[in-house]
Length: 577
Image 1 (cartoon, rainbow, N blue to C red):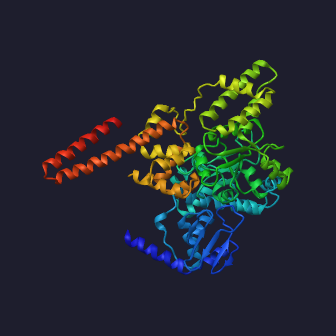
Image 2 (cartoon, rainbow, N blue to C red):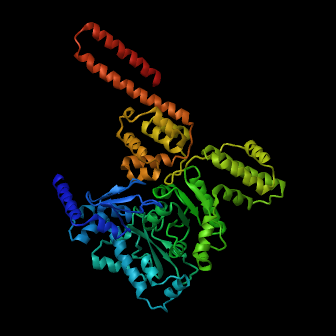
């Protein structure tokens, strides 16, 4: 293993030795000479004054604004949002160095998808302009260049078996990938939209029926498998995450063509959900790029329900959620009626999520009717309680004011009614894989008896406690590597997105687990438990230390003294646990 590592290290050094970082970065950015170094606007965060520097002497770059740092390979990895190995391979091909990455084999199902997708795309691009599929795409303002950029294709129904024969894939691979069902190609006579996961791997397809058929669904997706899970994928995020970071907000739409139309118009900081509700797994990935989103779902009832569902998923977290309202059926139609400037203004004037909640429920009732108004205020009371329980206190005053304007009643009157109707809101999280509800008692117990989880829970759920945590504990209080890693990283940058991107898998998984907890327990109770846990560990360390000393001491009086100290420490332990 060490020999393999040494060979890889030599290969990396050879690649870096054959390329100059100044020339390479200058092909992506406009560098300006500053003394013996070079500067530019940082591509990894928004800024007006250049804080990104390239140092020829060390062949490295550093941003004094966001802290991004590394060599030529790291630069490409971060700039194009690709893996280290993919960045290495790309630069290796530029300088003519062969890199053997056979240990990092791509799964056979993904390889099959790639080969089949090539044929789908080739089919589409070879059809003449008068073909029904091109007539359909023309109505959607999609030309051949756009089709190629988004890897669109067309399935005739014979492509998968052709790939199996030509590339010697096992038929079972195609069945696992969902491309063959009952010995036939799953897709036929459909426009094909490839779906890549958030890392860029081609994990599935969506087939759009172009010629209407009353017996067939309009869209048909690859059956879910170990690689294709709709709840974890945001369409085109692998490609748009760089633009989302640059703009520091993401536009979320429902459909593939909504995204394509908006992207064509210049709104590249965009993702689409795959015909399902926006999930916490999707939110976690998006959080690595931004904590600000603007929903732009369809303007029909289904779109409004999707919006309220998204708000319900995210309001408990530190996401800033805005909702756009526009004069069209969906974003695809909007782009065909209005220009970029008009749509930019709509996005700019999107309203806050709690304002949407007020309007959404108001549309369900005839508010001039006393009984309907009473029911409406009960719904609003539930959201009032939700915001309160989730600690979104900064929204409550504005929320009450919106309701007051909506029903034409005094603000104090509205607040009194909401608080009088305040009730227990069942926020018990339902697992996306399990139908059982988690008992909050056991969730809190799990947090309190895990030191790392307690610390991270307070840090993530109660940002006001971050200073208190720093003042109360120091890194030496913790023996666990995972919490020490968290403290070091969070002192460098307190963005959850930064932590998720730069932490080990173990720490990243723990942060995600805590972030997805819906419950907000008493923070003082969690903090007291954390203090007890740390104190318990410190006392036991001291007991171990004194016990070792006791073995080496001959003097009886000294032995008696140390034994008394150990007994006293054991009595302290009993008061904690």
